Amino acid sequence: MAGGTGFYISAFLKGLAAIPEITDTARDKVREMLLFKSNDEIFSYLMEVDPEAGKKIEMNDQHRIQRALEVFETTGKPISWFWSHPIKKNDLEVLNVLLMRDRAELYKRINKRIDYMLTNGLIEEIRSLLQNGYHEGDPGMVSVGYREFYPWLRGEINYSEAVEFAKQHSRNYAKRQLTWYRKQDFDLTISMEDINIYNIKEEIARFLGKGE
Image 1 (cartoon, rainbow, N blue to C red):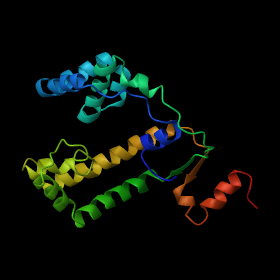
Image 2: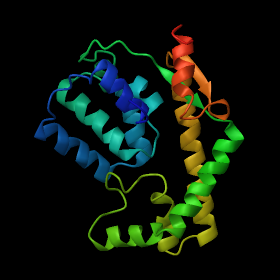
Image 3: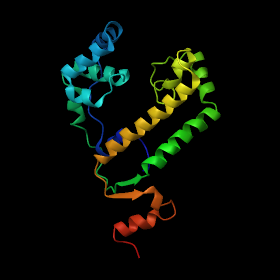
């Protein structure tokens, strides 16, 4: 298996947490909170009932905050408790290989990717989604690379600022990914500058002691 978010890979290997179905009462209570309380108040409440989750969720990540609070209101337990009690779904024998790229080169490629997306219709895609009834706060619509252009479309910032925000937030996201992966256990770490698709198999075989 190659790629995927850290959460996806973790869920595949360790299983998802056995979180009960959210009740209508809990869902309505949290939605009322989101409507009538400020972001600071809502995040403070999350930190009060589940400080461990609060450390891992950004203050403006309304979707994940809502999920954490719905779980707490349904079960009386913090969502972080369920995170630490996953259901293991398989007993695969796994070799974990991390491919690392030079930080400067990685950021250069990220900037280039944003330029490529803009050249190939990113703005038209965002406008089309909004015109078809999707909202800025909908899941998916808050993704990095989308959300930075909403202020520009509303006339609040100029285009260059929006582009730079998209690049900066993409770099920040990559940095968070790197931080997460550094905390995981990998059997083999390979520099992208020293490897390619044609010889990675030989590198792994050599690590396992099966090379020629």
